[in-house]
Length: 586
Image (cartoon, rainbow, N blue to C red; front, side):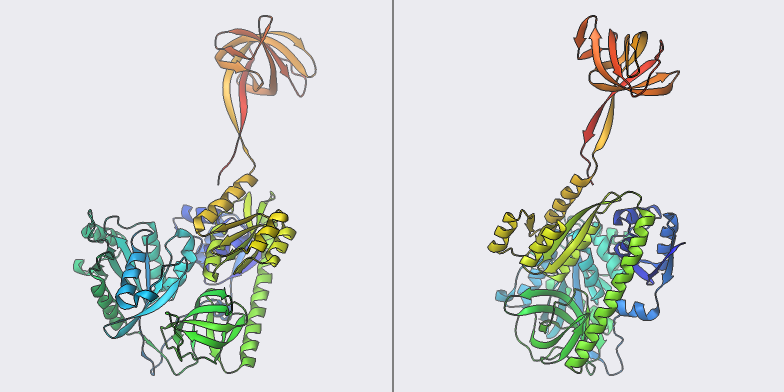
């Protein structure tokens, strides 16, 4: 009987793989076979999912989830009413790593924000607002490393305009194409910033041609894609780029309601000593003020402190404004939608309801997964138990998604625990119980925790660079892989005489017709080109002398051991080989 799984109209590749209890890599490979290039965090539609399941030969039936359930899981951009007012554009900056995205953002901040407030770009979404010619622009900075695909996709979903940064001396690269896909999926306008225009080897026309190959035709070539040549190093074109952003936003007529309860999205969340859970959020509609009650997923807050992107306390925040919020009971999740409610009772009730729905959905998934484990996996998968701690929710999501993509049919990463913030005694207890390795990303391990981990022989690995963490886990997974046995053919002996035969051994003689013989080795016994037995070579003699090697063209005696009686005949061939145990890699 087929197992039924409910999915939405679209589902991420990673989520579908999880529901089917398949390695993400296998699902991605099957999609590629069908001409669909998709990463672990990209969405495929219901029909595509159904076709792939049929191609894989799975006894699974897909069913469309109810509309109500879909709406609770999918973020939808609010539709403005007639009373809506103009709002600042929300701009995400995306591009291939090393194409100057960070430098461009720094140049924009230094030109428009006090230098003391300009900080480095972190490995998660950061949001800030600038003033340009008396108008505000909100920027979302998204990471460049491939492991942060989930964050970049969220960045595109939050956005009105995407600035696509392309290096003038390098051109369109895989992450550039990925950013274009995200922007198109989110239905946002793309403004291209051709950076490093002052550098030797810069060729703006070549970039425009490459963009045209991705169906982004620039305005001067008759298209509608706005392109601005800039240099983050010298500041050339920065002001003009900001003018272009405002022009595009005017054409888009960006508007939002303010006379409605505040609503928006959590774009980051972390724990700060002395402040508790802190959420960075982007307001989409309404006006948020300190003292209001808001619900975000399965937690809620009475807004204690409301701060702008420079850390200054503010009395209210309207649409398109990035803010930091304190007062949450527990840490909200990256990507959660939040909304203001009338009272603490209403906030608590809604948060509990959301938590209950999430619990039911999780339980349904586990039941389906266990059934599908039996259907799809005949061999037991070796699992690497890990605990992941990260500085913020977005980083935690990216690390876990990246580790899931390492799963194969033989080995997989099992996240037995995860969380945001420094390592605690609870993490050590869980590690000891589950036999799990602890991985920390951009977090601290207090000296007392390190000492206890050392005493209890708990593996503790701390990283500030995500791909180093992923490489470490990959190496640990490779150690779980069964080694590969490689057969090396070495030589052939033509049997010329049989001297002794017992139930478990044969002594014969012959000529080495090809290669050379060594001992110990194994051999296939062939008669008229058909294999009749497998034997082990335990001894070689040249005349009366025991030897370790016999070369091509030489005569020798051979001692064989067999698992059952072997009636060897003249002119039988012994094809000898050695076995080499090789470590395997993912």
